Length: 427
Image 1 (cartoon, one colour):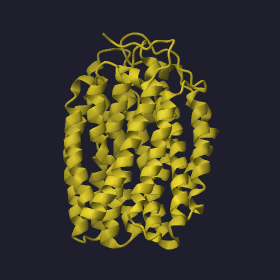
Image 2 (tube, helix red, strand yellow; image 1 turned 135 degrees about the horizontal axis):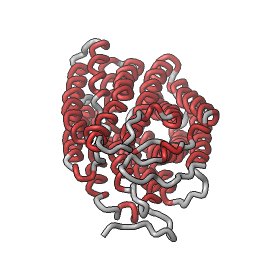
Image 3 (cartoon, helix red, strand yellow; image 1 turned 135 degrees about the vertical axis):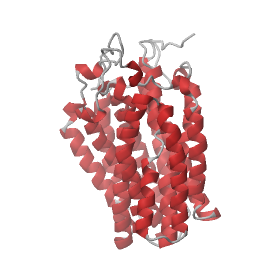
């Protein structure tokens, strides 16, 4: 019997996980996205080890991030059209081979341009497991009795993402520091292949490809990027990416300056733990404030806390501030993904989720490059100026264009043969 959401009770994680077939994709999805959390840190630590430069390490990681940002929406569009497994299986094979090639070139002291070239297929083939899981949630919750669980699912996915980002950087740091500089990327490649193939095997829960629905007159074939609200959210996620990228490189430099190179993974884990804890709270609260307003409030808190990072010079104080920055990310991240449900038709849902994750990767890539250059030239504190600039500019954009975060009637319509989506309150 299908589980229903009791309208007199607050939707919670227990109800969410009792959704029919949910665990069949949640558990493999968690395993399959873990390698992504290791990638940037593994690249930075390996290339910094072989070149001695944070700027070069950040630049190589940035090339991979830009390639991911450019190709992720296209991968999402293909998954919407042909099915997730059709895109994921060849993707994880290419990614595993590309990661091993990049590691081999770095360890062979290849020139920097060769590392840039090798980083392109690494980023372009990153498996978009997180967006695929979110698309599966949107599909299984697209029912009148379960639709109230959509914000809870967004919060749950944010918590899951951040749990991987608690484990991933710490694991990458431990492998690269205590085992071998290339061990992080080697492990990432193996986990990508195994986890990706396991997730792809769960075909029963993947959304129906819209190519299979071509005979239905009311199926919408739109690009997620053509929706103004999705573009505003992409800017918001660019700012979030600037925090992730700036933190990863600048924390590495900060730990080195403090004479404790192994503490960077711990500090990044504390930062990610703040995001995870706030995400748990966001999913447990029965919100009376709409997601658009929550996005603005959460982003304001993020911009304020991120603007203080460059002032901190103590490891203990940084742990506290990093926790607060992480806690400020969760409300913005969760509400952004929640708004996708209201703004984007079903036929472009995976593309929209990959657009946002691609925006995070692009912001991260730019921040990794700029923070690396600033850290090389002026020290770790200068690198932390990048998250401040990225979040402040994104906040100004969100506030100025907040009217675009209201769904139109067309975006409320489900791409199905019959019926339409119930109105979604966004304020």
